Amino acid sequence: MKLKIVLITGATSGIGKATALLLAQNGHKLILCGRRKSRLDDLSEEIRKSYSTAVHTLNMDLRNKDEVFAAIDSLPDAFKPIDVLINNAGLASGLSTVDEGVLDDWEKMIDTNLKGLLYMSRAVLPLMPKNGDGHIINLGSIAGKEAYINGNVYCATKAAVDNLTRGMRIDLAKFPIRVSAIHPGAVETEFSIVRFKGDEERAKKVYDGFENLLANDCAEAIWFILNRPNHVNINELTIMPTAQPNATTILRK
Ligand code: NDP
Ligand code: 8X3
Image (cartoon, rainbow, N blue to C red; front, side, top):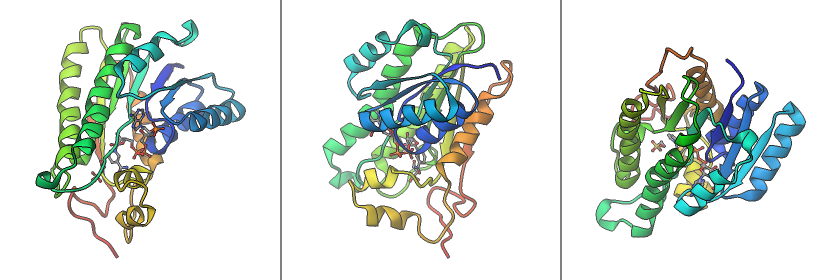
């Protein structure tokens, strides 16, 4: 695969960070985004030292459209022709039935998982080359394919990402810009710590007694998608732990 400029949202942790490291190992030039500046600084330092790859960081909150557009506007010319956008940042906040739902949690999820993804895509698209190298990969979830108990709004945001991916693919085929999605099951990252608002003990229990996916399993799937020739688009990959045959079934020892 030719060397590309790749923007990854949510690169400070989990799947985004693993993807950044895998792409850096392979020489790609990276733009890394997230709210936690010290994490962005540490990761870019690690990448520069270990792989001598060019890295630029954008410290911003995806929920704030002015911040998103200003951040993209601030890119040095050398980072502007963004070939690949990985819309990875996202979160679940809380786990409760819809009748007891916390409005602030709903807004966080809708604003990050859906509106943030849209803002970033809209800001980046004018910069993407229209020569066949452009590619967007969205992070959906098995939660967007199947609803599960108490998942309501999180599942709805991921179902929206799933259908938005289909719409984007139709709209952008004319350039052509490829559009793909990955839909993982349970991956042990900071996801559950965030969902349970810092309760690490409760988060750990989500992954007890079975072999969950690792962030790197998702990074490798992204790598596979990106490495297809320009005439091949992987529309989507659903990636599950073997012990999790669907969203609601986990075989624990
Ligand atoms: P992590 O919590 O480890 O990482 C989430 C990333 O998103 C962080 O880098 C975080 O950065 C970033 N982020 C969250 N909110 C914002 C925001 N408002 N602005 C900018 N960045 C933000 O979780 P994962 O790596 O697991 O999650 C990555 C994606 O994968 C998400 O979209 C998630 O929904 C999806 N997914 C996860 C699964 C799992 O089981 N873990 C399964 C299926 C899908 P920071 O806090 O520094 O801003
Ligand atoms: C994250 C996976 O099943 O915990 O999207 O919602 S799940």
